[in-house]
Image (cartoon, rainbow, N blue to C red):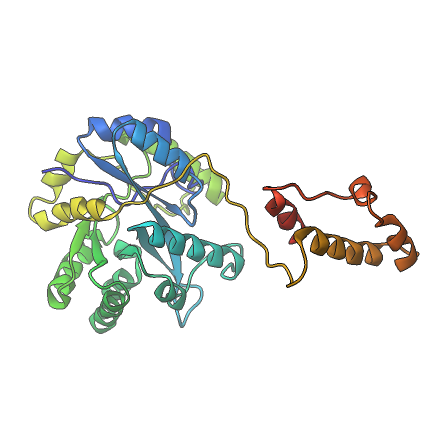
Length: 339
């Protein structure tokens, strides 16, 4: 039996990962795994690099994101949730959620999403619960089984046959307590489980370098007694054999990693630019509308007002002080105008 890492931060998660994509792919192949997921925190910046590297190594790339979910009653409470792109529709929905998180969800510089946003953009997305750091995990560790059950059932409704309760064994605080409660909940709600190791570094000896990176980001020193210990040295890229042995008592948690990886297929078209198509008023050409907007903008900026603007905007004058429209590339000009 093999295994697929479905929750993994790469170098593009500056907050807590030292895994470089270039070194990751040969390590995944050597560890006996057919695929690997990239689930960086609040971003898909490494997607193209990850896609090319995985394909070149003969591996299947799985794309996703580790989002921060805001509690509906207490905005200071943030939960982790893993959203995997099942197909291209799911990829577009995930990108919309990331955009919403940055454009509308930022508080104190931290982008976050809401439950309603996720529900609205759930098509083509497979969700992992986030383990002990997810909303269900939080309720379980708080001893609130009723709330945990209600939250799990709500996610099952939002993600029909696409929601999994995440299980981990990395030696972190409250992990065993969460694991037993999560397995019980999964049985009561008929929710499938999936094993993750939440890798943040490639090998166990890399743990110290990883901790130094986290300290730099969080503003602590390694010997600071107040420093939160959020990670363990077991969060390395465990091999398929190691994960199978680790979850030998819950084989379905391993099997489901392979099943999820099979379900996730996103095809990227590389080497082609996609520029936005801006709406043009009826009866006008792009050039006419562009000139009109340029005239309006110029009039606002010239103390002399419309007379001088009218003189400068005669045929042949506009290119002397402003961009002209280029066939096939007009989207670039509209992007600049839309800022």
